Image (cartoon, rainbow, N blue to C red; front, side, top):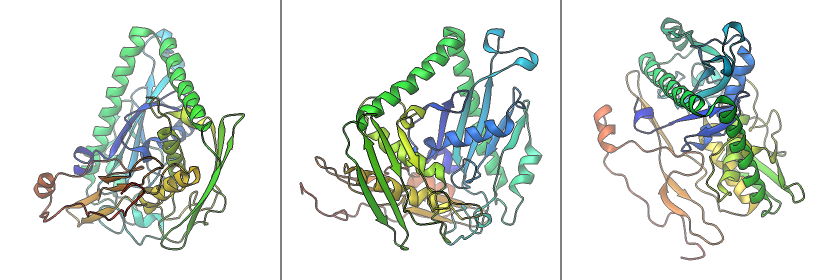
Length: 407
């Protein structure tokens, strides 16, 4: 799909045996900080029953997902030799590879599965929870299509969904091949030890960054009157931080609820950006952070709350609120500037660039995707080739960010 191929609205990552993030392609923060929750759900639901050649997928916002268009595909990596845990029933999983891609349509009341007025998760598309898309190397095509065409508002273009899911499976398999090359060259104990070193190093880098911060609080009122509140308490002795969202509005009747993994992703992203060292964003970034998200709030909603805007709108608000509490950066636009249109044949979704806030010693930026979104925009030529539309004008609105300290 255009969403995957052109906009690059996808993420690929490597996870350890427990589902902890080790390394990733870092361009989509909202995916990367939350994907580990999806991997851990798959591990929990299938522990002891996974076999070589199996692949699982989910998009369930209440079990590790974010919103329904984001489908996560998870592949267990089994050892190939006796030294790697292989051998009949004793064969062990040594890693996991996973990829998350934003489907251009997964059903729901509107094409592109981003309905602005949804009130129930069913109105946003097909909910997928722990579906086995490949069984011992056999792609479950009929079962997949039956799933995509199920529910009150089924997917409009299952063939495109299948193509994107096959691409995600292929990406996972490429990761497996490269991991096995590492294991063959260095040995499994060494590779697993360095995975832990990467996480431990990230933890230490974040602790050093935390030691330079001060405690603070921030309250961000949204257009509908709902409020995201955060209190950040720095423990100088432990070099740790408590990020507490107590006081945030309760679960909403609208679709601006954000599942807990989205809030976790925003938190991980902010603290990773405060680290000057060149490190991959991974599970170690969160080891120094005590994250409190009240259950039943708009940042940790219960089924069947609508959530589609939580991933693309509320996530940006959470990010701005954390930066505000820490006093390190002014707010960006608080949105991913979503554009969507379509019908039964065409489904299009885009996030449009905006601007980022300034800091104490630097200007903000203009005309750029910020924070939780970091995808490309579809090239005008591709847009007009693949869809029956014409792009008349696209430009930066000069001065829309206002004057700051330096101009």
